[in-house]
Image (tube, rainbow, N blue to C red; front, side):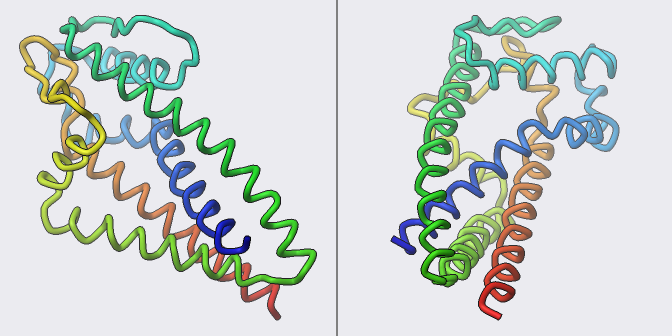
Length: 203
């Protein structure tokens, strides 16, 4: 039970790190200036923010709504891609709920029986995952980014044509690199916290 709970904790932390990064708008707002995103579009800074805010709203919304980003045209394929991204996050939400149930029972059992190795195993699993992701990203982020899309999407609709889907102009690859680094940082911090928690409880 402890090992299953450790896996559940690890997966939950990864999902929460991804969801936090998705909703951490200050990172994108910073990149608007840092990456000079406004130079690659006809939109001004406020319009870029408004368009990005819509993307986050659409992905997070539980309602069945059509993808209609303000101020920018979208192709049928581009709209389908964002709907697929939305569906992935919906599935992640359901998975997270299921994992939280397992974690609740696991932590209750760990505290009741004083089996605190649960937190050490979780910390190690998260650390291993971080290394697995960080190494290929640091070697060749572009290829790793493409591989990620080929794994999670069954089509090539993520290969946007800027003439048909100018939204791609406000979503530079460097921003996704920064997002990936933030996710890895959050996971590493969680690993450190779990290691510290294991040490304190064991002591």
